[in-house]
Image (cartoon, rainbow over the protein chains, first blue to last red):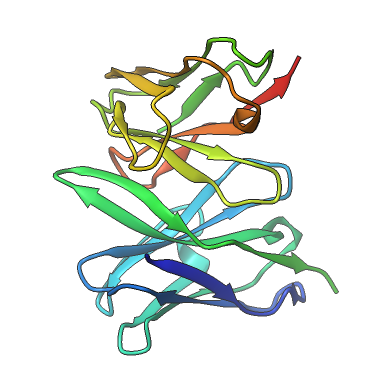
Length: 120
Length: 106
């Protein structure tokens, strides 16, 4: 059974870069795309973007100028970097596998999530 | 694509039949997923492709709809069903979610 686990600092200073990693266990990373989703406390979910391979990623236009994703299938990991953070980036960050069947896509499974607070 | 859920909150009793609706800002065919989130936990997929039940999800959950209007129905509420439910479109990126429906015990 595939499991995902986020890791990274829980506190980031304003204007600095948020960096998170996600370790995938129990299955191969090949043939899937891998997403990051965030949720400000008490609020709705926001898709940040996804990565398929080292050469291919899609980002939410609302964050595209500040986001970089990378993947290392040999280490079973993928990562998120979000630069120039502000308090509005405070959220629980989830790493998620994107499943696909024919042309249908959905998120399963999810990591447990990691809270990142942006504060000086 | 904007996703509008209604109601935003709902009070119901164990055994009730409950329906939550989700409307897409444009047609998304059947590219609609439903998730359940309990406090302090990550969301979990219930329904994908508007009406396909994810493996392991109880059959009291069902989804329907196509185009712009969708529903999630719980046929007989159980105590463990009190949670927040989100719809999500997977028709075109950026994938977007509804604001959620909080289902509370009456």
